[in-house]
Length: 330
Ligand code: SAM
Image 1 (cartoon, protein in one colour):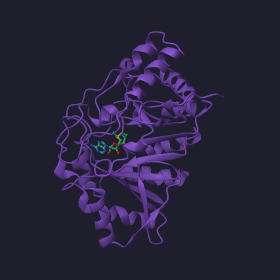
Image 2 (cartoon, rainbow, N blue to C red):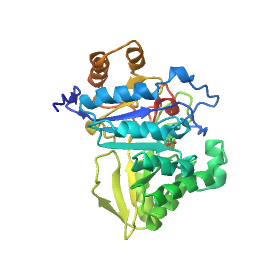
Image 3 (cartoon, rainbow, N blue to C red):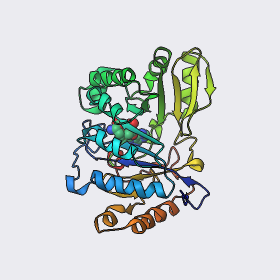
């Protein structure tokens, strides 16, 4: 089938969409959710029918990769059915999901049966007490059980995402890195980004890729560079003989905007050309007012054309985008 590529104004092809299926979350991480959290009413968020309709249009425009996120995607009922429906769209080559893992032990099997094969699990600490401090909830054991379930069911790779925050969890870099010696996990360290006016972000809390790699090499052993099997923002490394991988996503100190191939859809149906920009386009309106293929495609094209060459938030800019991450979709 002829696919008109979605090309932005900076020669980048957009082929990847991250869709937030809910802005609700069962954790309250201070850097990600607002302290008093009012989630959108059910009718304000996109229905599964609307999401699938949108995916069909995006596929026709050249998108072949979808990630489901949130909020917490596993709190949305029957999420496995959405996975199966998106997977069945002709032209989708890759579907993955990002979760905090709290509900994963029970849902790993149904998600696998729905056709999901790749999963990212967010976990910022290996310390039960600190987990409660960061997330406001005593669910460390559930997340650990969720990661174990994902490995047992056969997801591959299972990626563990760690947002590294100075003074909060940077003392655990070596413990997380050591996990890759024991398990076939991809532990991915993410530089802390200035997202959400209410978040506790400040430039001095960002631990850069350079510092992370130096601390890991000095603390555990040298890291060999690994060529990633799929394109993505993480640079990959391996400790000698380790079954797992260490990834670093240096969104702040060494950003990868030049190769950005993605757009984001928020749970309330806004299309965001860039995670770190407040610019959004209203998709829900066109989806709900009988918009046909061309109406939806026009909004998508406008959003892609609005992608800026790069985000403008350097480590010490002390500037944040407005929405909290939980309402954008990470
Ligand atoms: N609830 C799911 C989860 O926890 O993975 C999906 C949504 S969550 C918003 C997605 C990811 O965004 C998580 O790994 C979270 O740690 C990350 N995140 C949130 N705020 C961030 C920030 N300011 N900088 C970097 N990553 C952030």
